[in-house]
Length: 518
Ligand code: ZN
Ligand code: CU
Image (tube, rainbow, N blue to C red; front, side, top):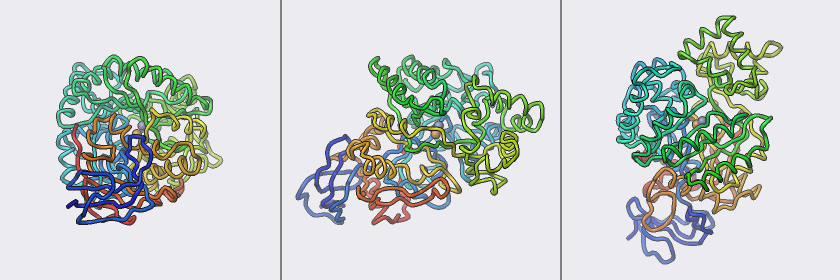
């Protein structure tokens, strides 16, 4: 007697195989058989006419604090996502101590979405989210920004012994179950680190056979150089490499998608196990202060405030921000109309408006400075990619899907609520850019393999019973930048380790997610 049988669906195996009409039988938390006449079950769900796939694995999530929110948050389950990789872009929620929380202040607060940021080691963080009960499975990376802030504050130069300290903290995190190392090399204090610093940390990851994921040091004018750095780090440390949210930013660089992929292909031929992930949008989303050059944040957000408040400091930052030869800071590469303020701690009236609108007839850079003075951790959605590049990158088999979501509160990029359904609705069904089996592979086994999630990312006997049932004819997401928090269409059922947690589109309210330790 099986516990559950999904009857009559078209099964996509997650490995790129074609859809096959078959029943899927589950016993306990595992799939035990896929085929016909599988025998009786305590519970059957008729899924005739629907697609059955492995639960999607979000390669790039910022849901680190979400399990700690008082109410269960089903925004990923409603997309068919059963596992999230958190701790991306160098920002993990552990290890943290009081001094680090103080030094990084608004940066973690912006990511936390109202959840208190607590001082904890990595084991303590994992135990904390486990006890709170995530709605989907969570696997966590340890972040370079966090490690550096812990060991070295917001200083630019490394203090004596700080790198060794970072390596010990990374080792502790891997021992506790961190599934990889992440970096976010546009964000202070990680951006102050050089290649050798990252090689040293990635070598710790290598000892644990964990991958290195990176938000590259540059995604616009110096993209090629930044990809070379990531490949050099992976080569020297002998780790698998995941290029986060692959993109070509900045109008002057549009059309560069093919060149980016050529670099990845060449690295693979040279023996580096490199892959990437991507969200299906022309706009990104991050801290508003990423518009400024890295020099703005040296010493932390209070130091940044002091620079912005002082006319001389502000003028110096403006000169740097407007200088196109500066490698960091987006200011010179976008127009104020491309910048949409999404979150602001003290001025809710600033959210939902572009910098151009906020500036009116005034000076847009001064407006930016005023908005940041009032909240150095404010968030934005920023349009900076070309659709041709989005498609070119998505068509490549090395690139999987990752949402890069923020916390599901307030105004956020629509990817938070709709990334995966948008790929399946817009890029598979409407545009025919990908086949359905290939898109499912990019959301499942392609990610499981990279992060070492054994037994996940495929449908077959022996797989963990994380499953999604969706309607390929209706799946999609109608969210917009102005109204992003819309429930996707076409995701019918979600099974999490054998438990039906979304049934006929409705979340049951159960917190059945597990912490997956490396
Ligand atoms: Zn990032
Ligand atoms: Cu990210």
